[in-house]
Image 1 (cartoon, rainbow, N blue to C red):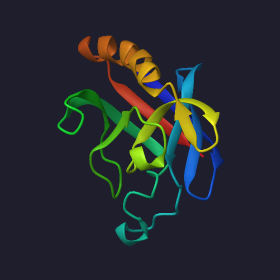
Image 2 (tube, one colour):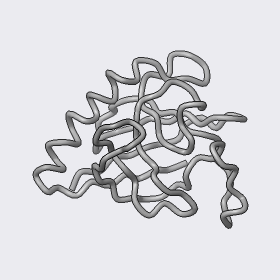
Image 3 (tube, rainbow, N blue to C red):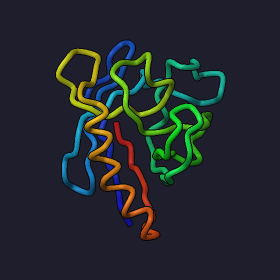
Image 4 (cartoon, rainbow, N blue to C red):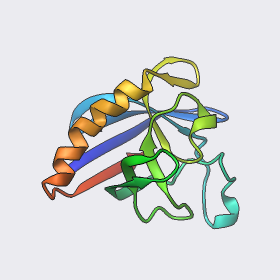
Length: 138
């Protein structure tokens, strides 16, 4: 089993910054929408809410939007089609997890190169039948 760990380290008024680890090894920073307490679907603000902390199975599936295979988080409460992908600010996330380097306030940079590094780890594991999970903590 391959375990990704996303530790949320800063909760801003409109965005959330985290650190992503593969096992215990730091890989990159993350950017998500604002963390909100979700007791029901009505508590979610579309395109402005981070997914709930928790453990989710990750598969690689085809993204029609990006036209490529991407990591998809399964069974996220109140959300559909949550992915880990490239992007630079909260306008690029819509609830997804963006990867990159948090060198500018409220953004991640070098996102496509960082995403490629992540996929270089995930693709071989997935092709070999290894289960992949992500654990998101506050």
